[in-house]
Length: 259
Image (cartoon, rainbow, N blue to C red; front, side):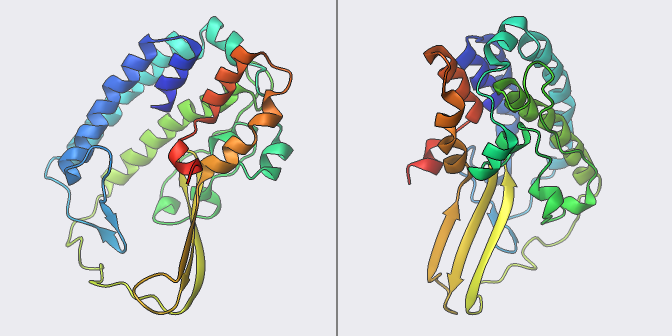
């Protein structure tokens, strides 16, 4: 979705249609798995709400096979298009030190050449079992940390996601998905901060427990707020038309920001 809408921000409509065409196949899998296309409530504490449907593994494999040609289409049609490069290369350059100081994470940080991904550097779940590469901006078309780099990190990460999915379905486990899920979660007294890598960066939750089934305090750290905070720094000296390209390269979701 981020790839398609960013192309439309720059003025390319056709890639948007390609991306949303393929997104439908992914949403179909989500819907067949949990009944919802956008608001899933599928991953529960300790596991998932229910088992996957019988053809889940086959459908995932088919989608991965379908996506790779689309990535090449996007590269030919949009990502390496001269007009697109002219609109995004050397625009909205975010130096690595500025990205770190503002707390930027995810593709915003990696687009600036910083080799950091929680799935590898602070692993959780089963990511340590998979072989894949962290993608960073290299200044291939302009300056490291420009809009093109941030966009392309997301494109390259689609291929890495395909690699992870292929490895995951090869070792897909069987068994009762509810076996490890407690009926009621009552954590001991204390506090904890847990973070995961989501499509826009570090999503973290700080929780204080008083020993009951209800958190005493809970705070969500959404990546979009920090990523958007850098907009003033990377927009200085650019034309208003460039700000559209810069804002689109941040890939914000306002629900993370206006809370």
